[in-house]
Length: 295
Image (cartoon, rainbow, N blue to C red; front, side, top):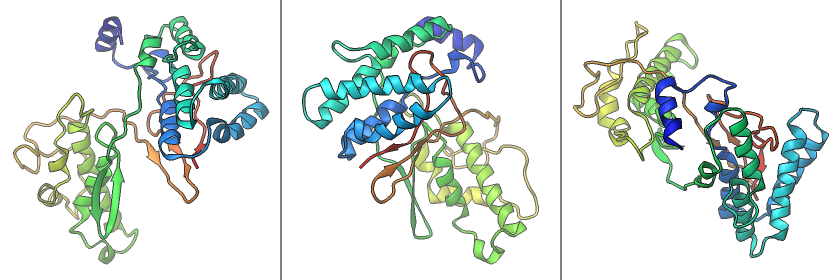
């Protein structure tokens, strides 16, 4: 991203829904194709054909545009050389402007960004690659809970469960007032730590090991009062092992939580929650989301 763009965001912040300047690089395309390439067996055409049929039968303005984009990606798979994995790489390279000769989709995306006053350019698209990383994992009453890292809000659920580990929820009665109150208070504490400490670990230090530790959460869980609902945010201090940070400020912000649902047969559904950053790109329709089946 250009220095001009960085300076603009520092002055103005991230704009509201509908402004092209809030649009990120459409990562879902590379995420889905990377998953298909590494863990699937089918071709891009196999998994996207049903979506193209749905788009052809649709009546939204963006339906034919996205169908046209998908058909060009299918075309790329047909004409590129190599085995299935190499062909899939060519498909995503064409979309993101990394292909050695065919980058029409990325060029159209850039033209749309420019025409609407956005800052994203083809070089930003080309710089995007999906990384593979180990998920965050905690154990709760014999169950293993997995979430993405602190670049999402996912680990807060792991922490909330850690905070609840010493509570006998069964004795409280399922969905009783005390049951719901206890869970909500645990979620509040976990979200306060989320808002204060989470960020992209490539750029900020997130003390996640401590935030998910038994010692820290046993200390924090004592803040849950069965007779009182706290309205203020109360982040803890994982660096000094204090239950509440002395000087705290609530910093509510937007977060993304990718979910991957794995079923028998390899059905995978990618959802982006809380922040819907998908705008309808004029020529490609590429910022729309459709389910993808990996098999």
